[in-house]
Amino acid sequence: MRKLKRNRNSKVIAGICAGIAEFLGWDITLVRILYLLLTIFSFGIGGIIAYVILWMIMPESN
Image (cartoon, rainbow, N blue to C red):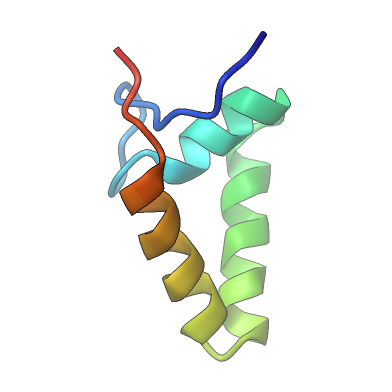
């Protein structure tokens, strides 16, 4: 069973997008583009809040 964790090996800021991509089995670039679109279409608020919340609740991988 896979667990959602931040990816330490591919950190740009906190490894959130890399962890989500690993969990879903998607390409990390696709997840980053989707995050960027979420941020743009929510005028920055939704994307930033989601990232900070995930940063606080997602455990770091070993």
